[in-house]
Image (cartoon, rainbow, N blue to C red):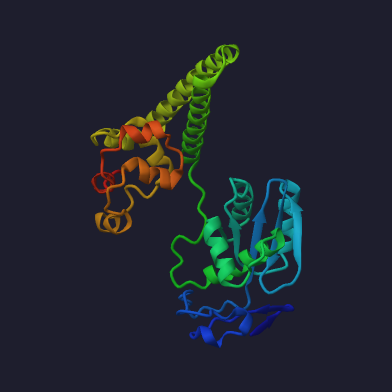
Length: 309
C-alpha cells in the first residue's frame, strides 16, 4: 500500500491473493491484466449520475460528495479535482444524463470513461459492494476507474464522443423508434376502444403517421448530406433499407474500420437477423423494421458491411 496526500491507494501486484482482504479477488486469476505503470500517485474518480444531481468519490477516500447536475455542479467538480492528479474519471451511462458532464471534463483535458451500467454493477458485486445507493455506486465506480486504468490494453477505455453528424443521426433514429412505439400502442388500443374513443385514437395515429414521415425525411436528408457514400454502399446490399442503414451508421461506428478477420471474430455467426443485431447494439429498431429483414443472416451482412467506409 502507498500513501499520497492522505489517500490510501492499492498498488496492483501479480498475485490477487496478495491483496489486503478488503480488495482480494476470491476466485480466479487477476483479471486486471495490470501493467507496471506507476499508478499510486494518481487519483481515480467515480461519478454516479442522476437527473437532478450526481455523487462523486475518489478511490481510497471515505468522503463522498453530491453536486447538482448543471453547469454550477460541473464547475464545482472541476475545482475539486484540481487538487488531484487525476488518472481516470468513470461515469456510468445513465439515460444520456452523463453526456454533458463527460464532454465538459473532456474539454478540460481530463481522462474520462463511460461504462455500461450492467458491467459497473457486476464489478461492484465482485468487489463486495452489495448494497446500492448513490454514494456506494460512486465509490464502486471510483474503484472501477482504478482497475480500468491498470489494464495493459487501454483500447476502448477512454470515452470518445461521436461526431456531431453521428450524434444527430442517433437522435433522429431514436426519436423515430419512440414515435413508432407510441403509434403501435395507440393502434392496439383502437381495436378494444369504445365508439367514444375511436375518433380520438384515430386522430392521434394520423398525427403520429405525419410526424414519423417527417422524421424519416429528416433521416434521409441527413444521410444524403453526411453519409452519402456509406448509404450508397448499404443500398447495394440486398434487403438493407434506409432505416436499417441509418441505425447501423448511427450506432455501429466500427463499420468500415475493422478488418474482415476482426469482423469474423466479433460478429456471431448465427441465425440471428441483422435487425436483431442492430436492436442489441442500439435498441432502436421497431418490430416492423425487424420483420422486414428477418430472412437475412448476421454473418452475410457483416461480411458485406465490413468494407463500408
